[in-house]
Length: 261
Image 1 (tube, rainbow, N blue to C red):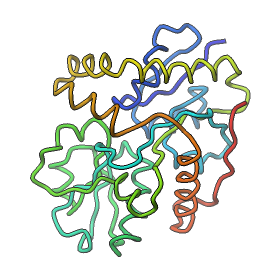
Image 2 (cartoon, rainbow, N blue to C red; image 1 turned 120 degrees about the horizontal axis):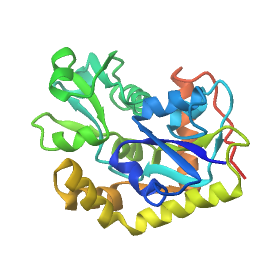
Image 3 (tube, one colour; image 1 turned 90 degrees about the horizontal axis):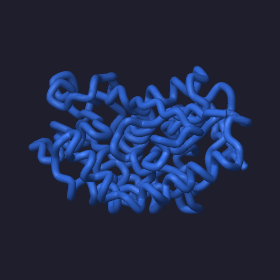
Image 4 (cartoon, one colour; image 1 turned 60 degrees about the vertical axis):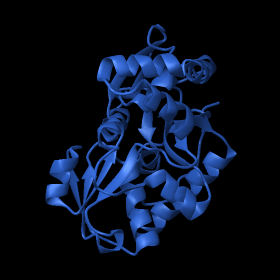
């Protein structure tokens, strides 16, 4: 049986699928995080690398692949709120339409850390256009690389979360419907992560050749800013994120974490 995988098209997912691209057991479908969530909901894929908030919003419950995530314990670099006014004066925020989890996280952080509760508007991920319609803009993923030297001040959402809670933040993980992934499939996804982490230099060079930019930056990003494990600390951070999302009316209930086995 071929397993359809919904894969985030950003650089941060490449180590998780590095060794799967020619694996006949999997069919990889690439899209932005918000689309991955929709594809899994529609059963267009069997397992998706979904934004963590979408696990809590699933109409039909998912199971999580154990041990794997896109997470950060400190600055993540590519999830940033750019702001043209002081944060406690922000009144209107443009949200990157690629985002689901980060769009929820920034609402929590602005309310709890800065006492701000602005108007939220969806926008395509283009910083100059976003700042034209709002006084702050949430930008996620690969588009951030081109804005790291922006004159606009910005905050790193994972760094803010770590300062606020002391815990790592989990942006995404593999999830799917019960019965869509057996033990061999779980082992293959976990082995793929190990292979990808071992080939970060190659992944960074390939991305630079494809997209341009500095391979040293991409290497540092993949090895220093994000990690790919879903351990006890990440699960604790995930549970707290769900609790806060519920408190802020961003989800209807705090979900039970159910894992493939």
